[in-house]
Length: 372
Ligand code: SF4
Image (cartoon, rainbow, N blue to C red; front, side):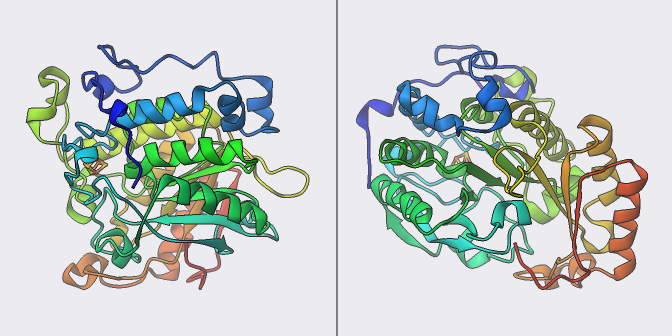
């Protein structure tokens, strides 16, 4: 296991709750907005992390993220545990980096897959606890092997050597410091593939600001329009009040914390990387992809999710409306989500998206056999 004793520094206040504002305090997130958005960033011709590595800034970002593990606030849970010391928070990740697998994946969106596949690294543990998780052995039970940051860098290089078109870190939030430090090592050894941050979308804004210029493609879920559904089925709840700035922390309740933070995160991702537009070769090198999984009995609030995207992000935002909901794990305990969706439910979702004027839709065959 990789450790860095010097990374246990101070952390700033939880001002990320003031969505959209970089926090103030003794260890602020630097304002990199203007500095890192260059013409190269905009056209995606060179992965941003390569430039940061050359300037020596990528390691600094990794260290800044590492500082946010003690007390841990890498995700909106802000458990406050001392991860480098081995304490485990809600996600069950501690100091050890646990990885389930890495391999070319051909089930992602076509502009990520191409002919060589998307180079996925599946991380164990998860900051959500979705009762219907298709991958619960890895995300909830923590199946996987302990790895070092060196190992992760080698995996990234292996995926590049295999001909993958990108490095796709799946469920990355609780391991973001390790990922950025591994990326720095891999960049030193020639890694040049775009980085795909494959996230549940419920992200800490402060962490996203530290990822600016590092992530090339955000692949983010927008699961629920309703915070109560997010609390019930994915345990998206406000963090323990003892870790909150009292004034801003009081703004959050189980009914608003999921939609408010996810919407703020999606706006920030769009600001950083913009609309996902594949190149002439059909491959995507930069941009935001939003995934929405249509759930039975409108548990996800599909129409509201789609309307929010259409009214708050560019109309040509890449939106994947997913049809393959399957009642895995504990879903049978919840009558509303204990079945697959109907054809009508999926077609209603598509009709809303088209009616709202979204022009960059990734539509699947109903009950697609392809799993993401
Ligand atoms: S759930 Fe989030 S805040 Fe808590 S330990 Fe895991 S990453 Fe850190």
